[in-house]
Image (cartoon, rainbow, N blue to C red; front, side, top):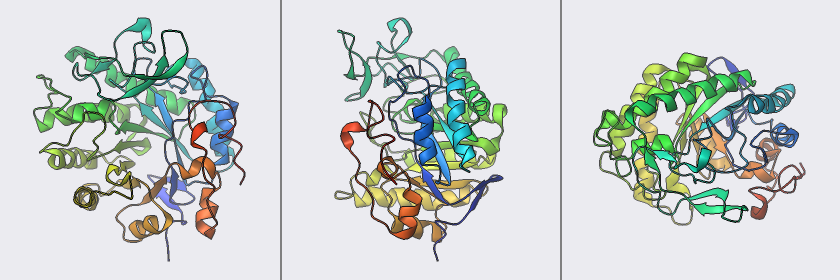
Length: 370
């Protein structure tokens, strides 16, 4: 018997099932403020046991894509309230994903056209930001050369995360997920190929690599409590110029053991080894699976979430084997607002229109029928 559709207690919060709607950037907020359309989009999908919002920037500096609703101004906090109230009105739960893109940004998005910030002044090779072209039109543009954060500045960025968490709770979110994956700022600190610092955050040492992530987690816990805090991680990620490194598994082990001591609500793994199911690197996938299996002993009080091209069968198997607690689905939720019912009853899934993934109006956003 599958547990996928059974209730789950997440640090005292009752989830109606173990299906999670993962964070999906949709770029539907013209003034970077969540609107009524955004509220409808999430409410349509609130039969998920838990919704994790699209990445919501913790500051203007942390933004790398236009038209994403942030969580750092009073107007943005107010804008998100309709979403959280609407999701709660139909019995759903929703966490805000706190996002700082670091070097994956463009000067046209930054205040006064300043350079984006990063652990080190190393440009993200092949990374694209959604910013303004010279003619003033919005488009995908190569990420700008960043500047390295001064040691004294790091504390300010940590505080940006903490304040964003407090803002999210004020906006009605049930908790927050710290975005530590997919090549953005926290993962930039974790990877020595793009973290060449020589201070206490140095990529040359394991303790230096994980320090920033832990400082963010601790600051957020201090603001809103450990039971409202999750973090997303993507071990074995190889986006842009962020190659694998020899000490990768021990680095994540050290980070996860520290997180286990803090007893946060959950760790959300994004499995990058199965992005292309037709060309899976079996050796790398095995390394990820080993880390996932070990994580249970390091996180005795923390739920384990997994995303990465899951289908119903694999999600059921991993939950039944108690390797994970909650299964995260991303793109299927775009075109299947009633995904939970479709999975439960083995109904066919509707295909998504990729042309409407990012930007635009309600087409391909709130018009998929149940």
